[in-house]
Length: 303
Length: 242
Image (cartoon, rainbow over all chains, first blue to last red; front, side, top):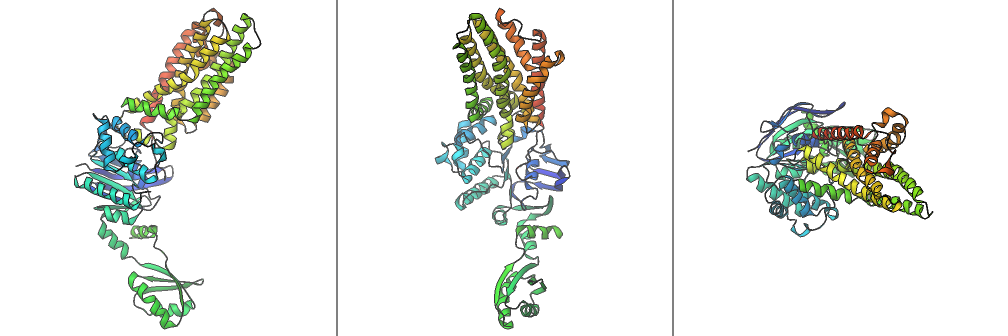
């Protein structure tokens, strides 16, 4: 079993801190690296993949620093986020070249196997330049799997895949995880991480905001206060009525915008219409104000 | 391992539309010589003008122009578009990537320059030694130029612009002004070899002695290759988002 280990790892570019004092281990199984765009996920993955030198701290794979140790790539497969591929090669040529660069004994056979794993046989003879985004993702995954690595690092692997391809890729990663491999993938989509990961690392603004079992983190996320904005025919009367309901924690009427905070998302959405009816006002709009993933993450950071 | 590197590099260099345009430059050189022949020159005039065209146009313009475009693209284009990740994420020693790419780029530059130089030299005048001397010199000069431009592409992301400025300002103007600077002009190195191999008709074209030229070519090429390997060993890939 291979373990990726970060200890007090930081990375900055000039004055900008991209990753700030992060410590964690990634062992066998599927670990999801979750965070909003720009949170530092790619920087973390690139440090783990040996493409970036940590500015401070250490990043190791089984006690060997990943930076400047290309021989580690015999055990590591990498699917980068960038879409760029050698468009002039066919899928089969691209994966075969990967197998040759790995120094495998039977590059052709290994390439055929890897292409079969990602279900790309039909298009393997076509130039990658003409592939859809989802097909490019799959051919990148095939190239990363061609040498049967014990560690697989994937940066936003589901980008551009249609739902069927996504399910297929999730099944593939699950079966690889069952074989005892260490799989780390990044995503900014909560549901992907929820469906696939045994363990999750949440990164916000370069810091590790939470790590561990997904259900626990999910609970933290759902327990947080929610804010809604409302529009009605008489915001002031509606505000008075809502303040009297037990699930509402706070009401704010500022510059003509009515906002309501609650800890019970479900109860509020169920009770706001009856409250409007009781107050005799017409409810025009009820909108969650902070449902973006960024707000969920920043809540986790504040805790 | 090496075969895959050669194949990827060769195909990415030859796939570019620029390469076709560069091949046309070689055809242009031959066409200029052909136009000159229409003026029905005497054998002495033919030698004199062809020698000038080979020296100023083939070695002075075509060779550095082709080398800067091909040399900076050999690794630079993959660094620019991010595809270098597919080579760097493999257990391939970095020196091998640099050396293979340098040699492939050298072959491409040679193919785009030396045959055109040879043909232009042969049709322009009657002395085959002069044409062969220039063509062989172009092959050696292609290696030195390519090594410089491959290294440059690992030092700056604006290698093509910096390389073109070097060709125009240093090779084109400054190096010719003073005796001391001529030693460090690739063009002068090439001319020294052309003079040595080109027979009697090539006498007097170089301003640098042959041993100095050969010594400098070896040192500059080796230094550029070593620098390129060192740079590739420590190149960092940030990804798209940072």
